Image (cartoon, rainbow, N blue to C red; front, side, top):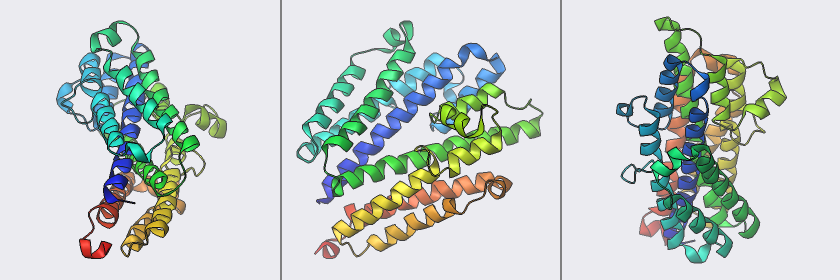
Length: 315
């Protein structure tokens, strides 16, 4: 597979995953606006901004935050910008994806571009964010149903799950850092609804309840979102998918530098396979930083091995 094709498929998948994650986090926070005190809402929006790597200068104004993270085309992390980047990457490899995939992505892009912040805010923002989430889910389902599970599909899987591992670990880091801050500044323990919000931000509330019941304990929430091998948005599940995709790409490409990427992916998976929640809680921030750092190393190694490799290596 040409390196430019692999790169476009990889980034198309990452941008779609990022847009879906942003839509979900914003929707959860908007849903909780009526159920919490102003102080709790301010803390919640602060955590949302930090987890989405948005400027803290946006403050706690829900309208300004939603505008910046949804429709601001100059913000490369906004939903509109991510969808535009995903569509452009898909356009560049139009011949490598199915017609159904292109039609769904193109349709979703134009749906998002056809609305304005004023219209969404005055009508029903939750419906808009549901459209984004379901549109991305539909694209992923169409991809799995219409595209051969070859090298291109594996690059899309790799992009999706690397983005997911980074987003979930960052969300956990920000949320649990707030718990540590609450203990040192005298805040009340985070409200029950805020833990519900964390789980819902990963579409994990119902799945968590089936395993642990509705009694939400911070340690259990961490264990579920970080170490559960069966839940598709846990970091461990993502690490399994990353390693599987990297191994498949290495076999298909025959690249001499692929083993390094496989070692990095295997190290990340091993750290999660053998992790224990009580040990991780002892220095959680360092552990989650390590997960994020390893994810970044895999991304860099993938780029060096399969996209920007020297000509003599390719020959």
